[in-house]
Length: 193
Image 1 (cartoon, one colour):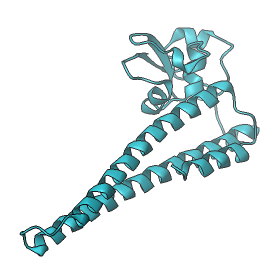
Image 2: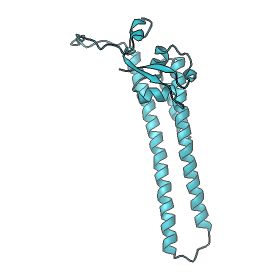
Image 3: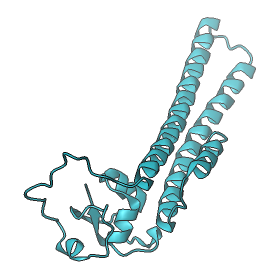
Image 4: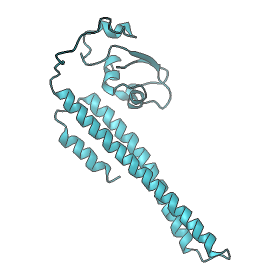
């Protein structure tokens, strides 16, 4: 858990521009989900540590020492595997933060099309005609996507991740100011590139 704080601080310090409320809400939601997962992994590691201490403090049973040592070795192996899972989760989180920083840096730079770029002859038709009719949508937001029915436990950030979209795209396309405004069985539009 202590490793998350430097990542979060680095994200805040390296950010070139002030994030929007929607972006912050999405990031806060992602961070909350990651903290929950890391807390579960940390609890499992703590439980295994406690089991190891309990096994080591028990007087030797009439069973041969070889089997006791095999049990302790298995517990140590599982403990190491859980610690590795925790390290991988932290590494994945760090990678996501770094990718977000890199994409923000690219988004902040003025976009200039390459000299050889040619506009497509037949641009793809949007899946939602209302989205293409709305000129207030940002230019960098896709006009195509899918309809999605909200299920119990869904969050905007989880829906965005599963559908190759972005939290701010979903919020903008559905005219939502608060990502917590999702309700089960609501049908929303998910922009996709």
